[in-house]
Image (cartoon, rainbow, N blue to C red; front, top):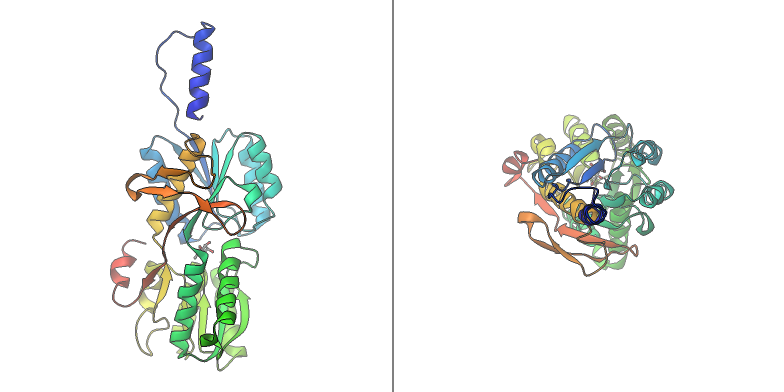
Length: 339
Ligand code: RAM
């Protein structure tokens, strides 16, 4: 229950003389953390920091892993959550718009909605916790593709699901960068394939890409599941096609290096512990009405420091954790110990 409501009830009850004037302990915030799907280490890592932070603040967290990375599976999960008296739902969306009716139902029932990692549209949330700016991620990936391809040739994208807000935002931004700068004129994007954040499907899609485009120079997989599957396939099959994208260092350790023995020269992600921690502090601050999600509000996210809510490109608001981080042969061993 939020703090203002607790105080209001206590004051009201004291005025009516229904409780004795002892100071009741405030409840912590009750949070439902909804991942995109089960079986993706990305969400387990984010959830671990989220839970640690929230519990240290006296809150409770239930983590929900929908069966598959679809809007339908998330709607089913949300159906079960709405009647359970949560203060806040924090969700990584499988679809930008399809969850709107359910999340509006949740908000009408008094539950606050925060999205993290992959946003729901601006009508379906109070605020989005964005791990790194969309343009910054897209620019880093585009430059990696350019560099690894040697400035020219065919490349492909291996994405997650076709409806994921975050994947589509990065892909659209990459295309925009490629089209707006002559530097990338000799790069040809031949296909965007979808592995649905499933390992086997991502492997099959990788195989199809290298079979259908024998001259393919680079695959960019902006998904931790996709990049790990592609890394293994390309390396095990001695493919000349190289790889970059967004990955977990712990899952990319054996595939990252220089030369023919490794499929991935370098790749990116962001501070995973930071993402879970910031999402937890944001959820608690929203539930306690310390912030409402309006542009310009500021709050302190523990040791991470102070954050300001800014306008997001979709018309809503967001809090940006930081910049994308590069993982390469020099730092991968150290980073693989963290996540
Ligand atoms: C996958 C998911 C997640 C995305 C990462 C990079 O784990 O699709 O939403 O942020 O990749």
